[in-house]
Length: 363
Image (cartoon, rainbow, N blue to C red; front, side, top):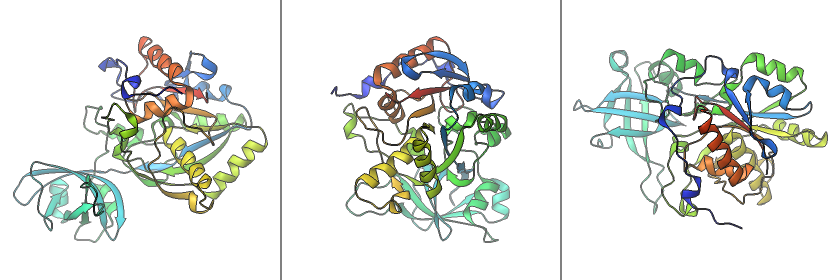
């Protein structure tokens, strides 16, 4: 089997193809149909005609939280927090952008004038996670609080900003609060949207249901690590970020029923793939089915991976040299994937979170 290096997942992308705003209509995005080695240009609302009665769409129902907070140190220095996890006890784990790291015990004043009036503050407790013998963690642990004793999710909703990806250059706007969120988002905790699912609107979901396509859901709280670049030419040396997932037992039952009737499991997005394949790996490793239904995953899917759960994949176009490019290449085949990307660039598809999508079959 061929050994792949980081440069095998590179491609030239004109900056103007990076979508800065969503399409006027969610399901009006373009859809590159890459099944069976083909390259057919379609519109996303044609999806019901591309699936069959009895197929099962599996969505990630995570909800993006307003995870970005701006504030000041007691010295007046500016600070930016990106909250990645709510830990319990009003504690959060967050990335911190600051010119000089404050001392443990320092309280940061957050949320501008409104936050200052209600006493919104983040008190630094230390690094997170605290694992002896490992390299320093990338995040920090804070207590997030205000005078009224509100919980962190309430405070983030009130004072936070939509954590748009680094390649979207504008500050978050009212449109982003709606469109950088799926129409079925239910479980708060993500700092990045499951972008393939952004193309679904209520009308399309109704049309899929009328066509006999069934639905199920998983939860994976997408972390900022999804944008972490791979820096080693030997991709096996890359340290994969960790994300929390959960699968309802009824989703596993729905997949089994889909298989029994000859239907296909269609993963909506790479996060759904990572969730389902993490479950399959844990069961194969001897975990009970119940224990495998939730936990943290660092699954790194590269060419040569054997997919156990997914037959079709809906996904957006990803960053060059990214772990997501590697996952898609593992699923659809490297040569075909790179050909699809070349076609998308030539035909001016829109890329990344607010961009267009592909429909792929397992190679």
